[in-house]
Image 1 (cartoon, rainbow, N blue to C red):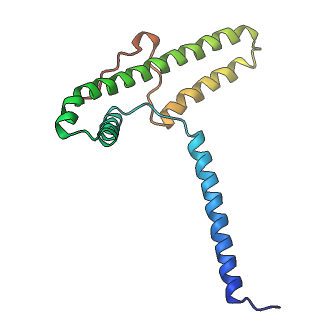
Image 2: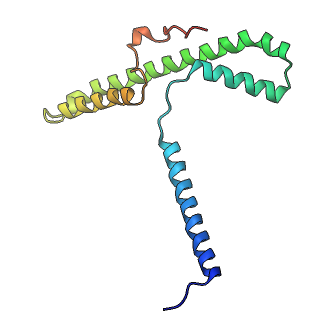
Image 3: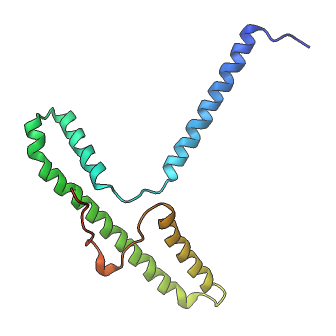
Length: 145
């Protein structure tokens, strides 16, 4: 049996550290890539836009204050657009399920219903409200200021 020399020990330690870093980076990349996005948060979006524009355009405090109403309006519009988009996607999925129904066997229909329940459960699991009915699209009240 050979002795583990100091250079070999350092090499092995660095190799293990590097392998762990690569594995963690790959896992983190895939986790982030496959993580479903949630609905936009109006306050976070507003804070980001203010910070980004202030930093990139070197805005003064007076300019930032003057731009705030326009940014608030844009953040609210983004939330409404997101709600409308989710409603439209929900309509497409429900229409697809209706179109699939005539082609399914009696054994397959409960499976499709289970898929719909899983889809709605996904919203609950990710703390997202389920898509509102089509008639309510875009009617969500903006959060209080």
